[in-house]
Image (spheres, rainbow, N blue to C red):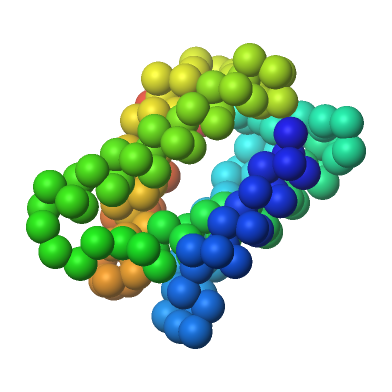
Length: 165
């Protein structure tokens, strides 16, 4: 599923991505990749909240790499490339669409045991996380100076909520 999902996101980025202006989105693509790698670093050996697993084509580690370096950055590229510029209801609907799509893909992955949950994390927490993640990515795109301290705040909050610290 990871390879299939990666191919879908690559094709979607070719079709819907704003490749003429990709440099505008690059910092936020790095932001999502770095955030995912920080999670991997914090939780590597002992304290995963969620964990990706091998599928028919990729090892556990390669599954993480595909998500961290291909799926997440390119999905964020498409998300930001097509973000509505006016109308609060359009913005809310657009974010809701992305949150639901990501969550439904995760539901399928959980059903297929490609992702597992640990230490109190579950699909409800994933939905809450996605509901913060997408607006945070947009905030990073528009206001890095506000997004970075808020990211640290949410990270520390999650560390406390899930008894990591």
